[in-house]
Image (cartoon, rainbow, N blue to C red; front, side, top):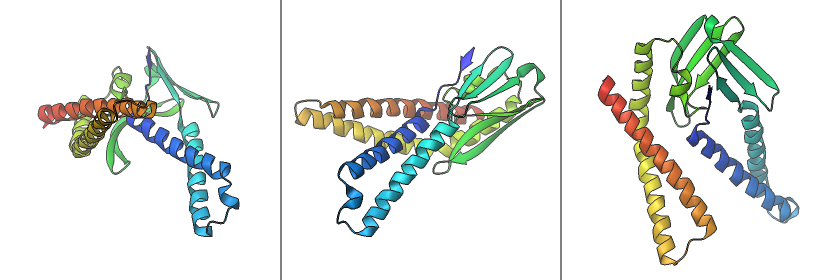
Length: 216
């Protein structure tokens, strides 16, 4: 049995959006921001950010799903929408592999599975272990290589930028801790988060370089 693991970058992106927006919302109401003497335009933008945060939260709850793949079935559960979908692997009628774009023209991969009950999509924007989830499906391997190569070539430069940026933040946090002769709990939390993202970026960068070398 395989269970979908949420994409680490997508999860962190939503978490940061919710934390920043949630913090701003808390301080806005705690400090009576909207009843103060600030100009209307400032109140408007803060209110807009709060609405966007609420929108992101509801969107996340709507899209969040648990994916379970067993020997002969795929089960997709949307717990916050009280929705469950099941695909019988033995009765699959069609499999479609393709790339799609999201977040600053970043390229992702998806497979659309069709059986007598309907359609189900699995993509690596949602799931970190996309490869393992689809490994038992009978799809065109040459098509898979093609979409893998397209993704690797398109995303490698972005990943290089991520690695340099995260490395810079990590070095800054280390030097800051040495300079201040201590590690504040907040700094430690940032240190761990950046370390995880840096590790994931380097791992994905290595994978892309290997794909370009082997498939080009």
